[in-house]
Amino acid sequence: MTKHVKSSDIRSAFSAAMSAMYRNEVPAYGALMDLVARVNEKALANEPDFKARLEATDNLKRISEERHGAIRLGTAGELAMMRRVFAVMGMYPVGYYDLSTAGVPVHSTAFRPVGDKALKRNPFRVFTSLLRLDLIADQELRADAARILETRRIFTAGAVELTEKAEKDSGLSKDDADRFVANVLETFRWHDKAIVDGEMYHRLHDAHRLIADVVSFKGPHINHLTPRTLDIDRVQALMPDYDIAPKAIVEGPPTRKCAILLRQTSFKALEEAVAFEDGKGGWKTGSHTARFGEIEQRGIALTPKGRGLYDTLLDASRKVVRPAADGSNAKAYEAALIETFQAFPDDWKTIRAEGLGYFSYSLTEKGSKTSIPAGSDIDALIADGLIQFDPIVYEDFLPVSAAGIFQSNLGDGAQQDFVASPNQQRFETDLGAKVLNEFDHYAGIEQSSLDVCLNALTRRPAAE
Ligand code: OOG
Ligand code: NI
Image (cartoon, rainbow, N blue to C red; front, side, top):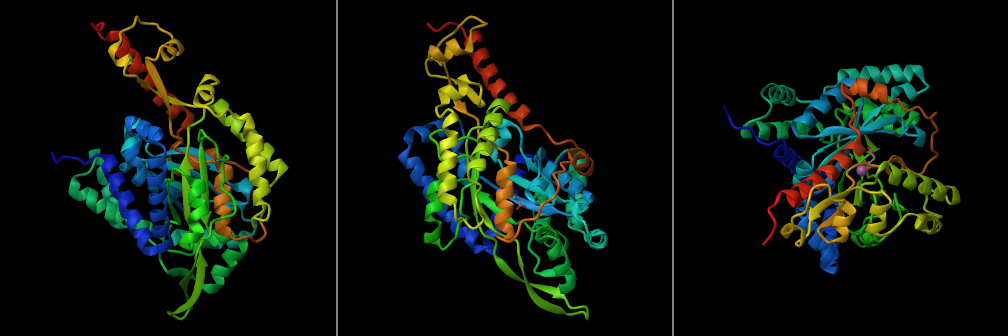
């Protein structure tokens, strides 16, 4: 039997290939990558303790390679096939995000690796949205869009064939994995020739810019790739020096000592030249705005209790100042956010003691030389300096933030309102699987780190 490549290696190769493609297609992404690399280096040099903890927990290597991307799909069939393609790379749907409340006619999940080892190897994730034509009032347009979407094939024959092969054989050989990566990359490529004429494009665009973006093209071009920074405020401040105009506010929690969840900022989508069918077998030049750049800073994953507190505080702060799309009240928004989040503890000890975040446990130097009786209390072991704890990184997304990121992509024009209508069941039927619950995964990672510590402490013969 041929030897199979690890799914994490395929994911890693795919993430690198996608990054190279996007860097080539969108030079501003390359500039942002350079800026992030520089800021990260400096952040690590300025904070040797932080660097040492990242190294000790095997989290340092992944940072410079870390990124997420986003795509928007048109049909249930596309979503279901995408799930199978991502599974070959060890990426599974985690979480359900309803964006209808934010005036965006999609619902989404994130495909990502789930185990501790796979995340450390390469945490590449793709925020994947499915267009909801059911939220479009115009019946005729809805039918036209559905008809157009039915005609396109977003996967190459090779991608489908290799996915089936991987499913049948539970993996791919090195040669097949290389072909798989090259084939799947095609699905994410930009096409500057639309599959509709200018008139149809404008009808779709008038209904919602996002509908035009999904329906008018041959495939779900990757619309952004996001490197992870260790100091988002610094990158935000330096972006203009690199000729990149950032959005007015950073989404998510405010600047803090202990980073929680996820902070994100982006630059506005580029207006790019595209060609529409002219109905006479030729092409007519036009433009389309879809692709942008984003950066993110990741902090600790919160427990349901911690997340509840985060949601409450974010909500309260937005009642004080609602961020305007044009950035006119950005300073006031930031101040309100900082003020409101005073209520969220800002040291790891309290965050742990109050059960707000997930931690990974490991033995200290002293702990690795000590043996204890079974049934010892974890808090006592920490107090005795035998066990230490590090925050577990949040690997998912935040719906309010995602809405803000979508918005920077949609222009500052009037926002549409849809009736809030989450429909996770429908999404899962279309996906052909249930989405995983993010909290279960963090809890599992936390528990297994504890088990490893306790086993080591209780089984080891007493040190001499
Ligand atoms: C996805 C926007 C959401 C994030 O990082 O929250 C997102 C999109 O624009 O398709 O990527
Ligand atoms: Ni994003």
